[in-house]
Length: 254
Figure (cartoon, rainbow, N blue to C red):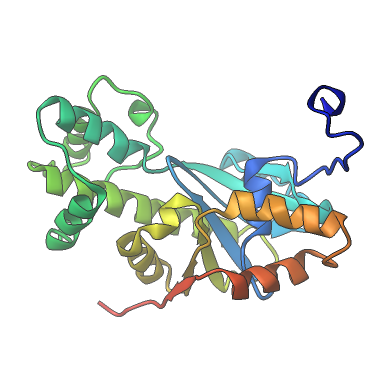
């Protein structure tokens, strides 16, 4: 490639090896007692550990151990994310109702009292013919009144995700040897301030949102480390915490 492009001899840097690994490097954490949520179409929630967590409990709850930077392990669980909302939006568009993201957030805020929820990781929600119909079906099965308006579906999805985040944090807390004092939300989903606040309320710990482009930032900073410009991941995180705008959401009593 260097020959074909005329670049000649250029350094080749092995970065974190995976987009999520690069994103976790960009978590602006102050100490190891944190969990992260890489939030987008799909969500990945986990912690950074020095060694893999190889227990029967982690196996039964379907957690994974993946390679991280500087020999660490990303102990995490995959969670369905904004996929639920994206599929609903496609249905609504076909029916002539197209909402901007700002409109969706406004609808959610105005109907925030809706507490109907489903398990977003229910296999039936992976790729149903109709996402709205399947959400309604699951609600009925669980003895809940299903959503009747687009706004109620949005609130149901948000509430479902937040409750699932709380469940997974609880699982993680029981499987690692350190207290989880803070949740860092990175990726595109970190820009959803309503869910960020709902998550802080549900978890009872501070939620730090950002950076949204964590994968690209982590990738660049590993190259900086290879160039000898930074020492380790903690120096990298300190730089990121000051260089990029992040927002902290404190738990509110409601």
